[in-house]
Length: 280
Image (tube, rainbow, N blue to C red; front, top):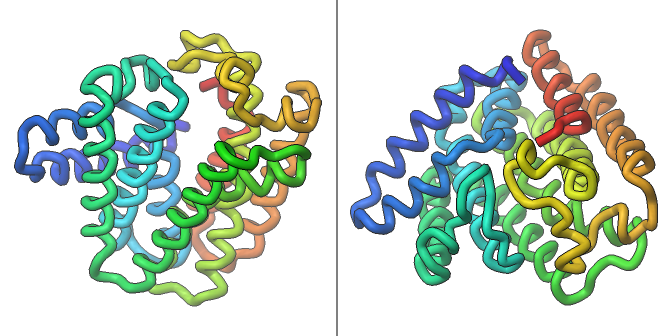
């Protein structure tokens, strides 16, 4: 994903400034550890590209882009605690490095910093609040009422992964002050990308090299965690096919969004391809 190098640098520079503004040194250090340890930055890149396709600029969307990444990072910290995962992004997870209490406080603080970035725009607040409610529903569903078939699994993936992808793209449209139908189409596109991404994640957990993936594999089976392969009883090849169905849906929606930004369309199409072919 070479196209995203410039956007990633801008995002991480802006994120670093926000983290540096946190007053308590211990809290600042733990947040810096989690937020600036690498990562694909797909969600904030989606925000910037969606803003561009809707006629805005990166400057319009940067706060929203960083905000959605802070929320994503907060959710990963909690996921790692729930799963007792020791590694993420080729380093110890936050709870291992700093302890459970500090990790939870870091997660809470990240959400607070994120909402400060959204606070000046009621539409952005509504968008992110809805995404977080869906994310919480997905987490609860996974723990309390795990999916028993493919349809239920897709509902879980839509809540747990698709919701933040959708919010990331919608925030770009909101930052560009775009029309409602464009914001919705961007969200529909991104939700399908998120679904493809999650299904590919399930495949990688079953088949990838942990050294390349940057975290342990086989976690779904070991933790009895729902994945499409396990719930639907299908092979990695069949699951990849399902991921490609979601990717094709995303591309169809993308093709219907009116824009003169052909280069950005290409970038968003490349992001779809990355979601279903990635090895990490």
